[in-house]
Image (cartoon, rainbow, N blue to C red; front, top):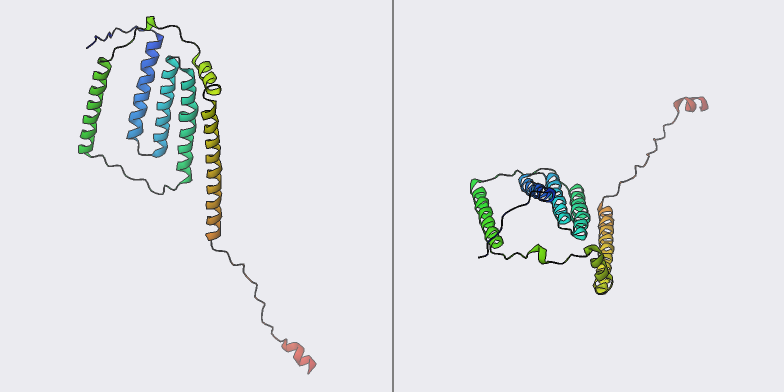
Length: 205
């Protein structure tokens, strides 16, 4: 088993990494602890933003921006709109049992042990032996539009078809809902009964 050097250099990058890691862990714990779905979505967005910050520290700018745009932005907003457009008349009561909490604690401890043994048994590469990396965002862009341009265009076509299908389904559901509503009957004004004028009859006689 290789020896793992645990000597850490306390610089700004290391401090930022631990702060972002703590924010991600706290956000994950809050996400599974809250009972309201909106609060859970906000906690999940905190986890995504913390992961994006970790990607920036690893000099993976493209992955960090994708994390912010797709996960922290699009998915969180989609979940919030889904909550707003559905009915939540009553909130389900969340009863935490002791057996479930004990099982979750055992599972977390087992996962921590497996991760610790996996990291301890991993042979890390010496960072000094690696050459200087080029701009990864530029390299990803070149690969997307040169070698992988056909899958990229197929993905754009697939997303366009998905958007069109969602619009058609939403429109058909709206038309079916409006047609199923009972039509309101327009009130018809009833004419008053004709009452003969007694005074006119007496004058005529």
